[in-house]
Length: 79
Image (tube, rainbow, N blue to C red):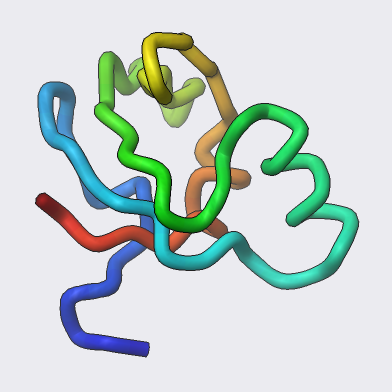
């Protein structure tokens, strides 16, 4: 893993990043892809809910909420 590659959970609201990897396991990767989360896509963090709640992302104009546990499996490069 590149030193500039970090989990999605390291971003703050307003920050943008490029997805470089989607966790382990075909099932998890397929789940991410059905939500529109794929390698190469640019995401922006809209909100991080308190108490380890969901992370709200903007992906190509669509808002997606995912849990912190899932967000940890998405590796990104900050823009």
